[in-house]
Length: 502
Ligand SMILES: [Zn+2]
Image 1: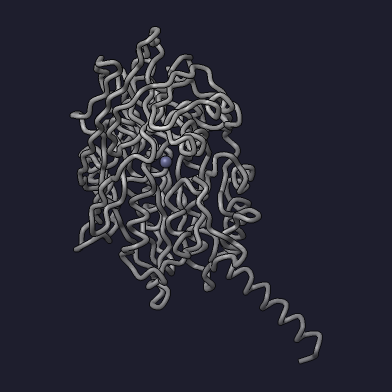
Image 2: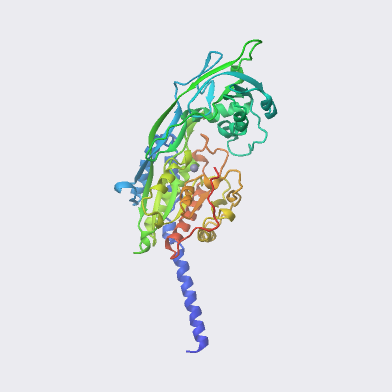
């Protein structure tokens, strides 16, 4: 055989090898056809229906939805992969709330909790102090006033606060206002603060965004021991201007408040299914495809509706996870897949945080997480795959596979703006993959990002773009197929640094 022939043969062999590798990494058309718009729509409409009352974390509505998802997985032929041979991995949430026995009085007039007064934190406080009214004070006025041992009442200002974010009203009342004034009030040794509600912005925050949520209280992941709330660092009250009587000459205004707390444990659950891989060695490794079950439940009424159905957030991803599972069921890959519907994501990624501490398979055997949250809205031709760009790139190989899958499949325009670490929403850290990235598992996040009905009762099934949902589901499946079959497994980008952006 001549040298030329040798080279020719080598080229031919390489071409075959490339062809072989390429066809290995392209998902089988028969499985792709398993992802059907009709199934996605049916599943999404069911999960986002009023029957599940918005699937609030830590309630029986979330548990009902979890059972429903497990049943869909079972019917699709997915094996249970939770605890004790079931689809379920239970965990507990602790909830701390202001006790209804708490009292707030201004000049002996009792204020009704949540309708006449908002209490800033689910923390104990006992206040019996003179009130200094500064009205429209700026920080210089506060600086000048004698506040030691007194409660100061004023209308909080918006200067130096970025309100160009989602839910500015809620963020302002639940945190930003206090954060702005706390150092100064602490320095002045104030005994507490009354923020006066005197405009539409804070009134809207109260009625449409926070009174039910503040009444619900604060949630934490329970892990072996209950942690009780301590004393408030600075007692905070929100009161309407009409309820702050101006003190007449010679009379002083007084606030008396006794804030007690109550703590509870509630169950929540991750639903976990599995499709076993075909390769004797690689099937011990797992690719996780995930979305969260829970949403906000029944809360503040907006435009006559109080059920927060969470169609996009996150029935859309639950439907997609089921779709991807059905495709793998039709044609398993070399590695195994875990399909996880995380519980209690909304309060602070609790289901995935629990899973990251107590994974159902060895953590080292989880090769990647493909997580989705809100994938059915906005422009039909764009998607964000967070964790694939610049300083936020989690894994070079995952990025490469995701981009290849997009080119071979749906050809979305990739929206990279939300993947910038300085993006004001800090969106990368706001869904369950973040818990897994924190423990070193290469993960990416599929999303069609925020929209005006996000976390409102209007996030309903009729507003979902089902063609787009199908294309994103296909994209997730294509990436999952590649990660499940490639000999090499993704590794963390050494330049990636985890930082909380929430
Ligand atoms: Zn979500």
